[in-house]
Length: 329
Ligand SMILES: Cc1cc2nc3c(=O)[nH]c(=O)nc-3n(C[C@H](O)[C@H](O)[C@H](O)COP(=O)(O)O)c2cc1C
Image 1: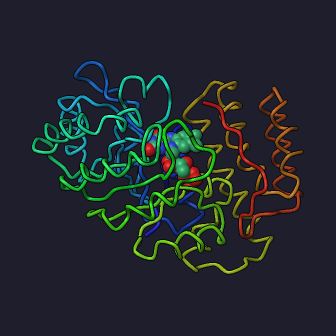
Image 2: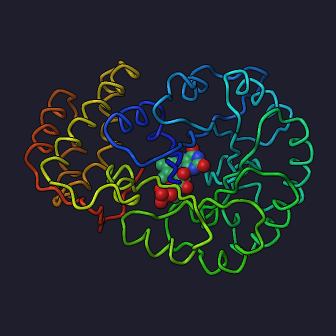
């Protein structure tokens, strides 16, 4: 099974709807995280992202970020009322402001706190729990103790991004540490990290034949047809057909973003964010990204993207990317 990774600011419902109107190959998405609110109420705007009737084509598992078991249970009850059967717990967020509060990847440095939180959480949770984790906060070896904790609880799956919190999203993944611990894990494992083309998928799935479920994030945004290639639905597609599908997807996404954000400046900034990845669809990606990132007028921006989408040579049949995407936030 292929899953869409949560990327806050990118893979919200607008993206998921636009992508699934045009492309296939992904069975399930995990939503970008819903923060546990300070009070008993949760912002409706966060729950809107995971309303099942808004996520029909591509079903979504809601993700929660926080460490207070009572609030977690409270939110899980609301998710259950909406019809959700699983909730995912974010133990990977690397933001300093989050980690400092022992949330996200910050909790990974405290396995006993993790254990006591799960002890309070699991008996009261009305729906199933899956966890998205890193190997540790500071050092990948922290994972050995974390696995012992995870194994003591009933989890639906363990989604592993094999970096540490302090690595953020860059640098080598610590696959040797994962090699040493994967046989110890009792739960179904989902791998999340650096599947960016067929080559990287082959290498990783060859290394971990016991893993059935793969989660892709940046690889889908920088090559929306990648899931179809991975599941073997598409070989090398007619390049002009691919171009038409990308244009259709881009149009859908723009409509969704315009409806959501309304203010011109916000729409422009959001489309620019997406183009930090979409530029990789084209051979001249650096030049395109540079040109677009300096634009200040939305109409002009959309005119230029239209020209690019229709005319620029495509690079992404197999999604090879030479450039690291620089993302804000
Ligand atoms: C901009 C950005 C936002 C992210 N937001 C989340 C998030 O909300 N929840 C989460 O569990 N992981 C988040 N991640 C991590 C991804 O889900 C994923 O594990 C990571 O990017 C590695 O996979 P990839 O190489 O396929 O993108 C985020 C990553 C990026 C780059």
